[in-house]
Amino acid sequence: IEHILTGFDHLLFVLALVILVQGTRRLIATITAFTLAHSLTLFAATLGWINIPGPPVEAVIALSIVFVAGEIVHARQGRPGLTQRYPWIVAFTFGLLHGLGFAGALAEVGLPPLSIPMALLFFNVGVEIGQLVFIAAVLAVIGAGRRIGRNLSFTLPGWLWRVPPYAIGGLASLWVVQRVAAFCVDSPSLRIQVRFSVASDFRYIESNCDRRGSSRWRSDPSVGDRPQPAEAICAPLRT
Image (cartoon, rainbow, N blue to C red):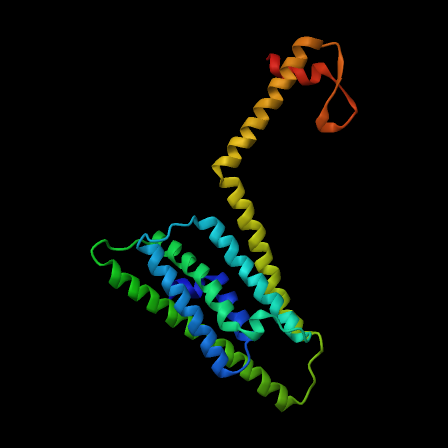
């Protein structure tokens, strides 16, 4: 329960579904599809049947929130998208990704080696309870807001409906950038490329210093065509 209630990316995705999907039956079907999907990948990843690195999964999870937030805007503008027409399909597809995210969180917590199936079951039940509590709270807030609006007899601004999807999409977009940047920085292949590039640059500068001497001027590609004194570049290499 604690993981789902503190996993803001998963909560934002569920919140976007609750806002988008109209009708009790459609909402139940959508949440059921989401639950089934992330339960499947949670079990498969925890048991070692699927092995996908966590950072790209987390980035795509954030991207899924951006997608559903955009679908809310399209639906309100009279252009219903795939999520509005077939919400259970989208919920099931992205639920597979969210299950991999749950598996990563579970791996950090750790499982008792002698009772993995039972621990998986209780973890999944806890996630579902937390998810249902959150949905009930959101529906209660929405219902209370509508009742207050009717009792006070005031008209809400026409732009107010844009606040939730834009807030959800904006925060999720920030997560996408942060997670992709973190993944690129932590990538061993990228670190190798950066080190190779830096080493090549130093070899190029050193070779030019040896040929031109300290009294010559030369062009530095990193600052355009403005000539740079060779002594300023070569001095650190000679110390």
